[in-house]
Length: 609
Ligand code: F6R
View 1 (tube, helix red, strand yellow):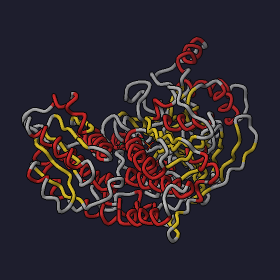
View 2 (cartoon, rainbow, N blue to C red):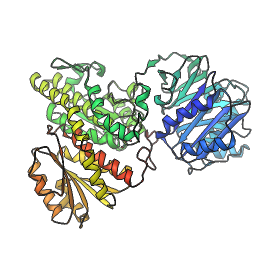
View 3 (cartoon, rainbow, N blue to C red):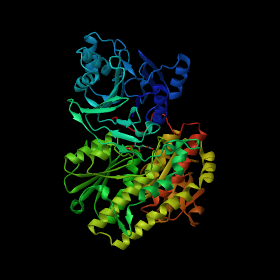
């Protein structure tokens, strides 16, 4: 979850590292820190957002030098204080370490190191790595060997970047489960936890594989495994344009990313429909294996999980295969019945969410075919899965997922249709019909975005609500869950999503005079039931905001407010109906003075369990 960036090259490292951190702050913003090799080790770190660090640098002066590294922290071990901020140093201040992930055996390491006379000053798991490296360097070998020896003693999932005064021209990075990439520039080399952090210097990157160590110097990078054997990973060229990772005139990334949804959906569809047929060569698997599948699992977290719930309806309907959509962090701790006749879709924007990654690994170990649906080329999930379908949403910087949610749904529709195509559960003309509907989604989403003014007015009216309920049926149910998640994570208003039919079994007790209820009530086979559910909450004093189909006049008689979205087949309707709910969350949060791009306690990529 933390952000890591490092630079070795001819230029001043600090401004490049700070620019990288700016692009990474979405990963964590509890504290930030930098270390620059400037003859000594110039370390400055501060609790709070990057701005606090920048203010401290202004006050204390910038360390100068052309080798440097920086970190933004999402606190796990130890409160978000100056002292717990990274980089962490060894006893002599010769070694600096930044770290993403968790060192699970840090407690026993700390006890041992302290017994041996090391003095640890923070509460973090990271600091023990600096002292371990210090110990290993006493043997006189190169820094890379010392890091290897230290890593052998560590348990957990992490990535590290280490520098030492003994080798002032290099940074050493290592990946054990948590993401790390190398950026190969012109006479300069970068290290980072995520691609956007290096895009201002290069688009040529090498994502590190599991158990890979890299020594980064201005002239390039040397890759080895944890035994020191040379490796030669292939670089990839990232086609993300730098501007797309910036705000481009918008107040916030989130608002920009909401508007980017039509383009993101188009980009995700492009090239995948050839005539009336769906071509998904990237899945890499054989069609025969897909014909053998008897059950599908979708594993994911948070918003990605909601996309998986939507996919469940589509896959079951189009392929007649049973589907279980499951929260990834629960999946591998029960005993799911997996085997070669099962297909597991692992859905993750970052492709680094450890819960999803571990669920996918578990499924693979049990013989299931795993297809990754991810936005991140070269991510761990993409590389470890049997096949991968990329959501071409471009970089998503706002912590709350918006355009990646839309494209996750679209990508899973494509997988569902592909399954239907190879298994023959839909006629080609039926598939072509659905593909045509998918093609129309960008224009429909555009019309939903045009509801912005109406939604802002509603946000003004309900911004002080204490509780908000979101209800829906069929695919409206996962859409309601997503609407509630957006509102609660951005505005800190208590919000719950419920299947509308379930209200009377308990949640309806929450309704009292004036409680806002957002009801997904588009025209579909459960529409009449939704109308009844709306009446049930209205009768108890709720203020109903209905998301309804354009042209529908019936619901207007029952609801207090209606947001009309274009008619969309119900399996695809969540792509459209979630848009006004994203906007509602955005405006309520903004009006309440919340930071929508960086909501409290959250981080973009969750690489700890
Ligand atoms: C909510 C949100 C999170 C993520 C979840 C999974 O707006 O963004 O719930 O969806 O943390 O992240 P990925 O998709 O990277 O696995």
